[in-house]
Amino acid sequence: MSKETTRLYEICPRCEEAILKRVEVPYEVMVAGSPVRIPKVQVEECRACGFRSLSGKEVRLFEVLFAPQYAHVTDLVQALKSAGFFGMFMREHRSESCLGFGSREYVAGLADDLRDLYLDNESSHVIEGLDEGIETVPLEVAERRYTVKLPKIGEGENGIVYDYAESDRAVLKVAKPRAYSREHIRQECEITDFFASHGVPVPGIEAYDPYGSYVVKQRLAGESLAKLYTSLGPPESPRHRAAKEAVRSFVDSLLELFVRHPEAKTSVSPNNIFVIEDGERCECLLVDTGPAPFHDYSGFDFEDYWTVVIPKKIEQYRSVGYI
Ligand SMILES: Nc1ncnc2c1ncn2[C@@H]1O[C@H](COP(=O)(O)OP(=O)(O)OP(=O)(O)O)[C@@H](O)[C@H]1O
Ligand SMILES: [Mg+2]
Ligand SMILES: [Zn+2]
Picture (tube, rainbow, N blue to C red):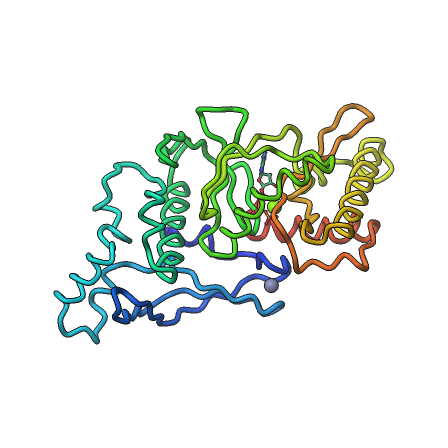
């Protein structure tokens, strides 16, 4: 089975509507002053909103080295080495024996266009490694060892979330291999305090990558609305009604907050709302504070959201394997 089969389909992280199309294109980066042509780089495109993102996840160093236009391979190797490419894209040369995220000083030293390719490639190695694991996989993150527990506990357009053995009070979220998703996670971390200070319960951030490749955050009690919804029973049941009314007032208060602070606008997708059921009372929490600047809530209708949007979203999440 190909590694890619589990990650064949992705929902557009920007509009959260369409499935991304993937195409491969050649791409040129500058290395130590000379252009290096990478024959195959993946591009993901959204036909619904126009989102387009380069992804370096398929890039391998040998493809760069043996690109046909380089007559003097030794010169190129020298240039790559002096540009700090040593070990890049070639995991067998890495000093760490286990899967993980490399030194952030090394990342800081890379030229901008290479940095994103490197980070894409790094995350896709980590995610593939975790996909292949059984039960637990040791992962090195910022000089710490996380024994990641499998399977994942959740997934969204931007990240995959795992439990790890060293703590049952925190989770590890790994960004999907694209700049948009890393930026999403970086901003999620930066804006978390804002929500907390405006009375919205959110998981605290324990540690995060300045490049947005991962974040360690508090583990929330309860269950995502995406997972809970189908078990709520008929619309007239007390349980269903309690959850619905709790989500209604939670979403109302969020939308009010977004009007006053548009920069804090997030997606109220059922993956992002957690519900703690406590008898007749239900509490809601915002599990993902990542920004969704392209969402338009001007015509938001809660009944439509509850009866049409949520079931549609759940079906879409299932079709791509998020839940
Ligand atoms: N702190 C947490 N505690 C428990 N479960 C979590 C936590 N964070 C995330 N999850 C699980 O992982 C799922 C996806 O997480 P999250 O929404 O943060 O990912 P995402 O890719 O950023 O989503 P989106 O595409 O909505 O931005 C959640 O719906 C939830 O099931
Ligand atoms: Mg989310
Ligand atoms: Zn889109």
